[in-house]
Length: 254
Image 1: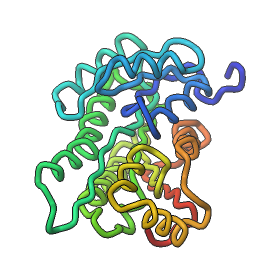
Image 2: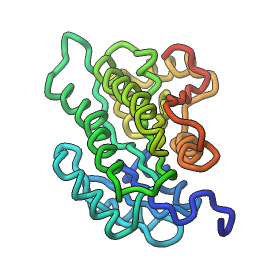
Image 3: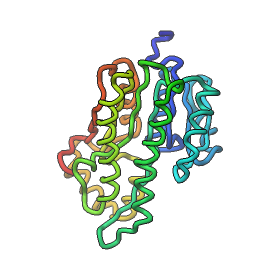
């Protein structure tokens, strides 16, 4: 492997690559030699991220999670222009506070569509014969520790992430004979715009109190999530599949 980079010349799709965890993942993978297909709704932002990435051979792709019919064409384009896939990271996600009395079905549907159904559509197309490198394909979903321990007002978001985790365990068993691995990374609070939105809703004092009480190792940085994603995409984890890996900052209960 040239230059000792663990993902040398592997083609990996990253959704939600314009910011937060997705951007951190794209940067990390490129540093380790991967060619990254940066996917998001704004092609200008995707081009900007591609320009930041180490090395060459990165491509931007428009990806709107509200239109599942576009998933197949997006993956076909990536395979045609970049080559067969060795990895897929679904980082795109949305979150809204949803206390029972204020739950809006439209918001609930959006959370499930982006956080869960988009992942299913991506995985289904990516795992078709001819779209991936045999025995090298690793699929990672960015989930949440709230799928295991759900704070008040986060029922729908947590449910969408629990559905993601359950599917990953099932698909890992189903597709292991084909050499395709499925895993998820489940962080607690991460220092991203999504967390900033939560702070604006519940207040900084309440948020800081939650973090101090439940996460003694502190708020998680996006690059720390990216480190775990890199491991799951690399050969170092070649016998790991069906895992839901928690990054809790010491959290026992969120």
